[in-house]
Amino acid sequence: MRWHIPRSHPRYESLMLRERLVEAFEEGIVVPQGLIAHGRGEAFDYILGERSHEFAVEAERVTAAHLILSSKPIISVNGNYAALAAEEIVKLSIETGAPIEVNLFYRSEERIAKIEKLLVDHGAPKVLGTKCEKTLIPGLESPRGIVCKEGIYTADFILVAIEDGDRTQALKRIGKKIAAIDLNPFSRTAQTADITIIDEALRATKNMVNIAKEFKTLEREAVEQLTLNYNNKTILSKAFKTIMQRLEEATAKGFIIEF
Image 1 (cartoon, rainbow, N blue to C red):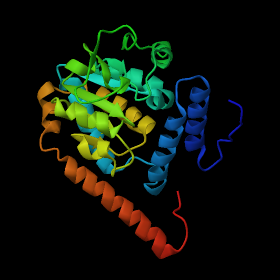
Image 2: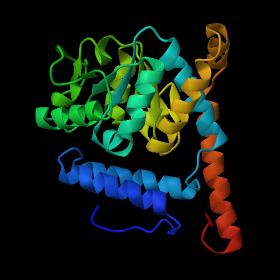
Image 3: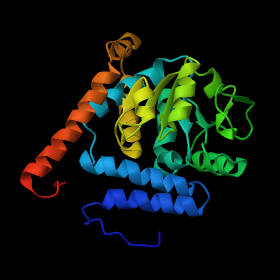
C-alpha cells in the first residue's frame, strides 16, 4: 500500500477499501467504471451511517438460509466484489457449499483469470470462469450475457453484488431467484431482486459468513422457517425510511451527520 492510513482516522475502514480497489485496478482486476460504481455506493453508505441496519441483517439472514437450502446456489463475483471481499467470499462459499462463478459486465478472459486466481489464492477449492462450458443469458447482447452452463445458467439461487440492473432483470426473466448486495435501494438491481441486501459488500459478506456458521448448528426445518414470510418490499421501504430519517436529522441539527 502506497499511503499510510492511521487507524485513528475516523473513516479508516472506508479508506482502506478505497485502497484495495485502487490496487485491484492497477492489477487489472477492477475496471475504471468499477471505481465510479464504488463511489456511488459509498455515498449511500455515508447516509446510512456505515453500519449494517436491521433491515440489512434480515436480508442477509434470509440469503444465507437460501444459499444453504437451495439445490443449486451460486455466488456471482465481479471485479469490485472480489477486490473488496475475496477472503470473505471464499469463506461464505465454504460455509454454505455454494460454488463461485466469476461473471463480469466488462468482460475479458484475462480479467476473469486474474479474479479466479485471487479467489483460489484465498482458498477457494473451485471457481467457475475461464474453463467452464459457456452459454448465453437470453435477452442480453454482447459478452456480458455469457455465463457458465453448470453455474449461473442452471442455478436456482444466485447471490450477486454490485450488479448491473439489465443482467439482474434478464436472470429474473429465466426464473432465477436473486439476492443482491446493493447499497443503492433505488437501483434496478435492488428493485428487481427477490432479496435486497442494502449494506456494504464486505460488511454484508462477513455478516453472512457468521450467520451461515450459526445456521449449521440448526436443524434444516429451523433454517427453512427463516425464509418464510420474507417481504423484500418491506425491506426496501425500511431502507428508504432510514435514509429519510437520517437526512431529516441532519437537516434539523444544521450540521453533518456524526459517525
